[in-house]
Length: 219
Figure 1 (cartoon, rainbow, N blue to C red):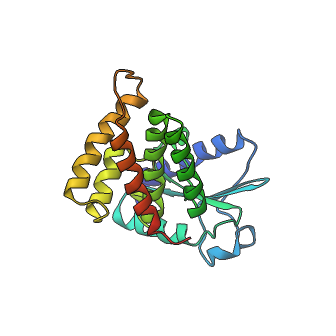
Figure 2: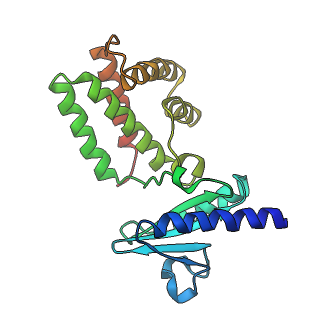
């Protein structure tokens, strides 16, 4: 690593420190082994931030390379659900305020949210049901591709969701084309175009496909 890259990582980590400390966290750079959870084994992250009911493992990487993503995926798999710990990745030069920390949803949470979608549909709130169904597709993508940090650790646009599902065979060509068209409807609804109608058959189709993908997931 060049001196300039090392300086950029240190500067980024200091910005992350300021962000967490402003929220009341205790921030530790280069934590000692006795300050780390046992599930990390011998791995020492760049920093941790701790607060009542919330503990964060922090890694700073120079740039989004394949090696960095592989390392991050391995570490994120070590964090047990319900352990009180979570993980965030920051790239050198990234504004810490731009980091969106996305947790991996539980199967039970997705099941409950699908019930909400059906309730909205039955009550005639098709626009709201459409938006929530798309949010569930994003949550499902984070579960399906938990080891791919380009998916699991950042927000996804509707088109990114469709392309990832199509690439993996979750959607065939015909489904992918229809999903792309529905993503345009979703975007118009989200951005306040009140002239756009959500067709009942399109909403039912979207919900059905979401349920089929969800049915493949283990609890």
